[in-house]
Length: 182
Image 1 (cartoon, rainbow, N blue to C red):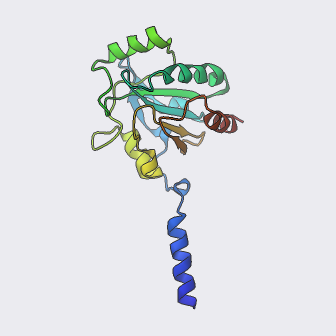
Image 2 (cartoon, rainbow, N blue to C red):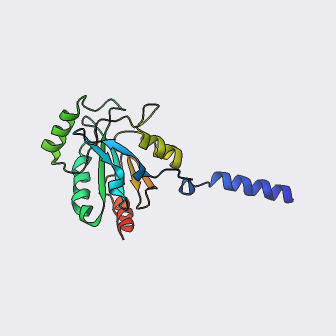
Image 3 (tube, one colour):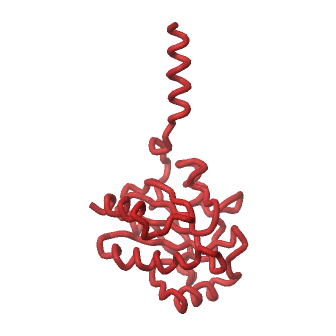
């Protein structure tokens, strides 16, 4: 009976293992990434602020979410939220040149939140931010498609992830962002 109980508890713990207890050797703010203009973005500059990281693409059916990302940025940037767009061609739907992506975002969506250079977000060539996310949060941190979202909390750890279908201004994201800002 005792062995059965131990086996049962072990199985229970295995199935309900949570990534929120990950042993972070690094946090999000420990990384750097190049901006769309080629300047270095030191994520340590965002320390203590929540960051919504979104892998984007110009030719995706979800590209209209740029408007909602800009709205979220406009609404919460003075309260501390950072919206970080990471253009990616990992799903073969991004322009080939950083300057073309920058122009596309500014002309079509009036984007003024930070954008990075075109970056791989999955696989062996993924940026170290995405490798870190997978290592610390599991498979749910790997973008399944463009406009996949990773919310980083004020401690520089992954708070939650959101599918491409989840709009940046959805109640689900807004409620979580507001709880992090308070």
